[in-house]
Length: 338
Image (cartoon, rainbow, N blue to C red):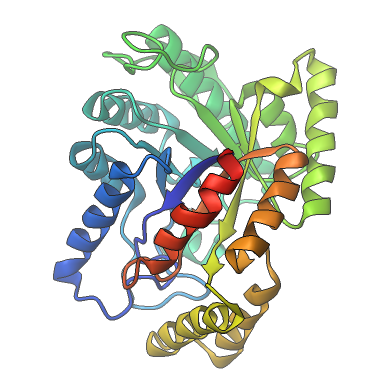
């Protein structure tokens, strides 16, 4: 199994209590820590503007600005977003941004892309909130523009939502030109989401990677739907790496796991999150990724046997305490790489 890790950027209330003047240092230091550990293939951020599970005045740092900063601050680890919302930036502009970050990083960008869902921030930023059908149609047109710009240097598309006429992308990304990359897309493309009729169909056509999870049975079902779409278009589903995101609440024993959950709840309270949402955090104790090293290895091994070979993990306490990361590196990663 391959592993990536989220760097806290504030979206999940994971920089609460850290002075804004110190937040970049915390993020940079963690990025460099992951960069120095061979256990980690990639680091990730979320593409959101307002905190979750509810908007607050706590920090949420912008994803692609962080991509460029991490590109300059690290040397080895790959750089991804889980996932960029297509409608937040024009796809021609976003393709150009990604190509530039690919150059800064020496060919380490991963493009995580999706249709978007967080209605509050859509409306607050003036994007409206079109129905799912339109958001997914924009996703399909946008990934076609990405592919053209990255693999040929220009894009032309007379779509329903995007009309571009010879949009240039020079230099093209290093991946697919000076360096190996995706044979289909140049920059590897992650199509995120488990929508069975449209999202997974787009993934079958364009993705190098998918990202969906839920529980084990949900993962198996979505994988089967993806395989059916691949058969329909004549593509081998094994060309697509399946990944999933997990919140990791890892402890040496059950008591320590519970303490990690309670610490998240305390940060939520400090940020002024409503009590019902604070209480809901306790449900994560039963999710995949919560437990002792032996329990988490068992969970991940079952997912791997179902076809999930890339885990993108989030340690909610990372900005304050790296002991859970260290335990994961010491006892979970080796068990799944042996």
